[in-house]
Figure 1 (spheres, helix red, strand yellow):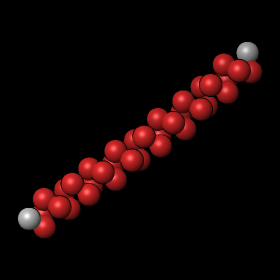
Figure 2 (cartoon, helix red, strand yellow; figure 1 turned 120 degrees about the horizontal axis):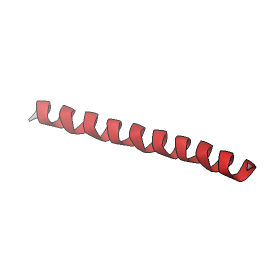
Figure 3 (cartoon, rainbow, N blue to C red; figure 1 turned 30 degrees about the vertical axis):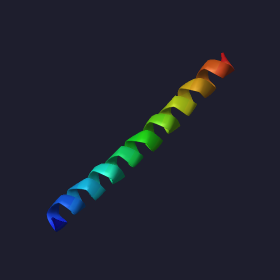
Length: 36
């Protein structure tokens, strides 16, 4: 059970990181588009 819990936690951490990465890159592209 503990092993499964750790896997779930890692998955959540990875998904949170990917979401922040997507938003940060999205904001960068938006800034570039706005400059044009």
